[in-house]
Length: 233
Image (cartoon, rainbow, N blue to C red):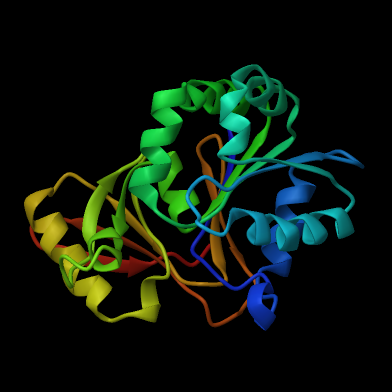
């Protein structure tokens, strides 16, 4: 499988900077096609239409044909399956991880995505979208819901046997809460990725992509004690 897990970064919505240029260019390059078919899945976001409008322009400028799957599309699962099967890039946006994973499982899209990835489609995701491809993630879902101040472990689809922690250096509390999670789950290896950094997986090979030289990626794990190491390449 070819997969790109993006830690975060602004894409130009709401007059923000466009911060993920080099990562997006690498995603397109991985297809080895002149005009790849780009498919955006915005099921995690409450603002999927405006999200797609911006990401569509980015990937059109990179030479792609673009399409999307929204909540409205889910009423026609034959259309969903056709779009997934025809995609060269599937990009899952950020938002509510739990809602996203539940929807993918309930509709059978999880199996469609896995088959598409096995057939050569580049599977990409940012933040919650990146967590989705992993066995688990460190999520702010309880903070968003106003029921806790802690980042918590949530389930993903398990295509990769890692925990994914996006936006890692944006909040020092993430490291504290990650240690708490790993204290109770010592067999987990977590990949902790800053905004403007991404992990590229091609089968068993891992590469770091950065759109900001100061962005970092770390590996957190237990080896008698909690350890966290920067991944350099």
